[in-house]
Image (tube, rainbow, N blue to C red):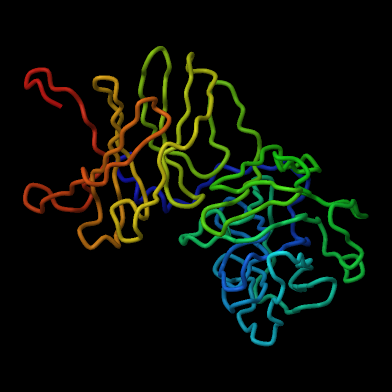
Length: 377
């Protein structure tokens, strides 16, 4: 893939397939019991359903107006922007509040602790969510272009396949079953954060998200929960979170290592799988993530490169891609490892096109190899 930067914008998405339902989810209710860690955060999600095609509905905190819960949606097409008379949230990080959003045709009603918080009529038709849908907590949605993540704790998160009435919302209790039963339901009573309905069979806690004392804890930086279909296929490997592309293979000591790029679930990163037979694959810890300075070479995205070995040390060369970098958008960057699992970046080794032999655009995807004639790399 020579033009990964363009590829990222493509609207396809393969993650997050729920068990097929006979009809799409249209009318629905999203419900969470949530304690925000602070009231200054903006644009993170306490609960989102995403169709994998850039459409989503979610319980979002403070995106348009600080301190206010709102029904988030793609391009705000199902979101009322005039929120000045909606009450400010006052709960601290130790106080859980119930927030629910009921969608019935074009009518949207938001509840806080069983009391109506907001109500409006959408200007656009409701969004349908079919069998390719995902559930996300932390990130606002799968394709967001910023770093906003929710900070706080979630005690219970659930989705209903209908618009609940005010009485039904008031009757709900965290970690207790209800009638009707939820369409999807997380109580965080196990470390794996399983969906109690079994609809979403794979759940991944990413970026430091963790389950503690029956709560999902999110740090507001990179932590998110992603609920997807199981990816445990033989021969074919599919990442459970994000879009996967630009595989970088490396063979060592009888093991086939494949590094690959992941995007659509935060900043682009290098992830890593390994196999001994090219059929059965094991996921290893994330190799590298875009954690540099906001205007630095890898402060936004990390693109393709290669892996080599010399004298027992593994060298990984990758593209740092950041249009905010005043020294140039694309850099060749370097990291090393002694075990292929834990990597150390060496930003001092980075270099960019000089503007003479190569222009500093589309200067990426380094491939390092041994030239036997010159006896040099």
